[in-house]
Length: 125
Length: 221
Image (tube, rainbow over all chains, first blue to last red; front, top):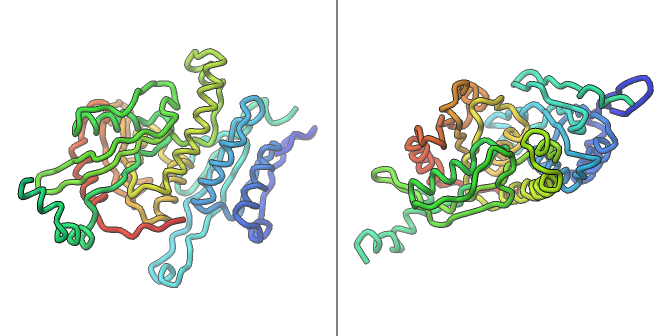
């Protein structure tokens, strides 16, 4: 989300945009965007390993006056069946929303719905 | 040396454990801040060694460095587990020093130091994931369990094929709902406990022996 005169914008990121990035490039891109104040909705989210790395990188980037961290919510990875596991088909990450924690708050999440809110007074200058 | 000790040290015994499972495991206590991880670690140590792991506080991120105790033996009738227990700092995706000031009345300097140390603690907790054999994931049974921290921890452990026990803590609180946790994560054992009062911890210990003693092939990242 960027602070614009007209209001709030979200970036909806297709899986094609990120699929050619390595994990570290992907995480760098996401964290840079979020630090800029944008809210990202990823069509395909992050693997558990990437999520843990994103948290780790976020902690390193926290500056207590300008960046307090991220808010993130995504659906659990798609389950794969026995035969898919046998043939090495990995679980696919699913849709995930990521934003700066001073701007985005997770209200509720369950198996089927993620509810978020924009923190009042933070979105638009 | 008694007969039992001699058996434990014997080549035959070691071969049996190789075949049937582990009797010594490094177990991490994980979870978001303020769910009662250190209270549980203290409960386990008090019950089995008479020791404690660390201080607890209502202010989040009281544990900001991982702490551990080695060779804790828990048993349940005929079976037992010897473990190295690691109490990890709470994992969070955000840390705002203003919360320490506004909600808990800490002064600015102390809040900033606590927040800085807390970020380092989160990193340390994540790195410990590479070095453990199983996890007791502590969740607050009064809170929404679908946090990304819980999902991320579970996803990482499943990817490594490591056993997970979910301790639905604070069951003594009026609004606790362990059933919500069970329905949220049906693929893993959920044990309702109160680390504070000790309620149902015997059941947790039995499950720890059962789940963490199993032979598994740990996968690395």
